[in-house]
Structure formats: C-alpha cells, structure tokens
Amino acid sequence: MKTVTISEAKARLSALVEAAERGEDVLIMRGSKPAVTLTPVTESDLALWPAVAESALAGFDAEIERDRRAGDLKLLGPSPAEAAKALKR
Image 1 (cartoon, rainbow, N blue to C red):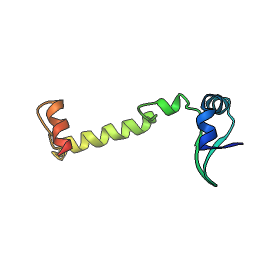
Image 2 (tube, rainbow, N blue to C red):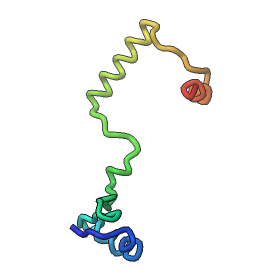
Image 3 (spheres, helix red, strand yellow):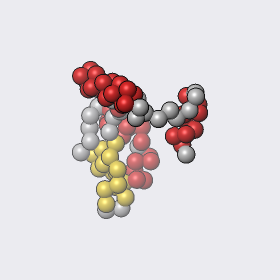
C-alpha cells in the first residue's frame, strides 16, 4: 500500500491516480491519521439504476396492480411535472 501525506499527494496526484487505476491501494494521511483512499471507478459504479432481478420486478408489478384495483394508489398530479412537484412538498 502506498501511503502519502496530503502535501505529497498534491505534488504526485497524477502518479497516485495511475497507481490506483492499476489496482494499487493508495492511502492519503492527514498528519498521522488516515484521511482517504484512492480507488478506481468501475463501470458498475457509474450505473444509474441498480440491477433488479426480473422476478422482483414481476412481484412489484403485481403489487402495484393489486393496489390499483383496491383503489389504494394516489394520483400525485395530472402530469409527470406536477407529480414531481407533489413529491418535493
């Protein structure tokens, strides 16, 4: 594991990022205490929606349909924009 101070990290940031991208552990210290680690970003880190199993979605759809038939769903607005405003209140 590479361990550097904040001052060293400022001076060598590009090299430290490259090391982290190669899989090396990089620890940045604030004085004598660990402050942060550098880790590479993966494709899964960038995913906007979590992966949901198809069976879970089917169950969710069935639950919504049951609630809709029972009249338990509340309309938040006549349009998506109005619904978004209602959720922010």
